[in-house]
Length: 165
Image (cartoon, rainbow, N blue to C red; front, side):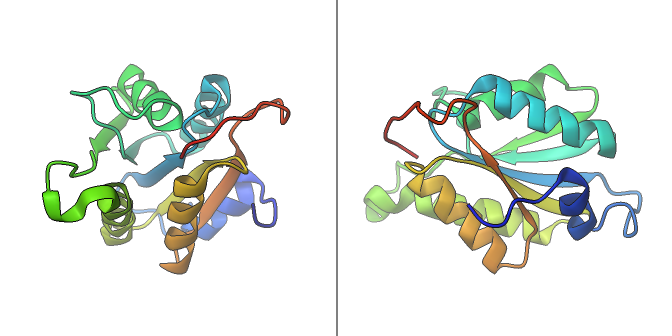
């Protein structure tokens, strides 16, 4: 993870509130497959408390209920706050044979592009763990695309380990 940043510092980099307009805050989400539900919900609640209304972009497939972990927790959090959070899902295109194993990477790139195309304010949150290759790659790509990325630990207890995104 990069240099730790406070919520206030991250929101400032996202253009909040100086660039505030009639547009909701657009937030891209990426997270480790074993991210702690409480950590994900607490961080999203902290952001929502400040911005008041948002559109959440998440790489979750509600029909297949995949993937587990951070993406599922973020999606379920957004659905439970439907009065103040709109959610857009980006399932990976596994059904495109030519993409094979890169479907997840293609999906992650599409999500970053969607957030980049949004009106200000906008940003990305990444719940990372040393084993979170896909989420770390998505966060790096979002930062490269000049989106402010708030990197957060995926779990409370750093002794938990597992493989995956």
